[in-house]
Image 1 (cartoon, rainbow, N blue to C red):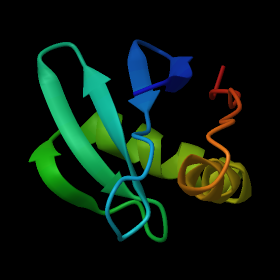
Image 2 (cartoon, rainbow, N blue to C red):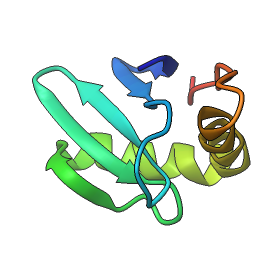
Image 3 (cartoon, one colour):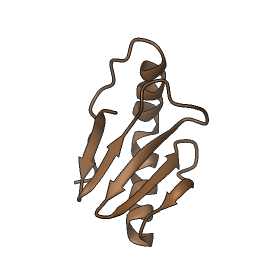
Image 4 (cartoon, rainbow, N blue to C red):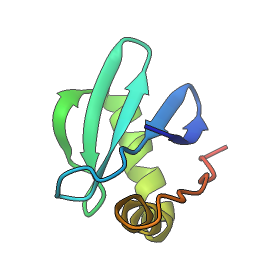
Length: 86
């Protein structure tokens, strides 16, 4: 599972050929979560409220890039790094 972004101690990863809905995986300290790209909703696991808010803000800025990576992960597998919030 490639790390596609890392910012403020938040690691964002995507699995190749992962199941729908389009989502990514977040690691922050001891926390783990799956986050839906469409709306930033946590669909599995949990994150501290502040980290969840930062991830939602980041999604708003990077949704198009996230979806391109989601599609790439289901086709040619060439995911790109995405800028963080810094």
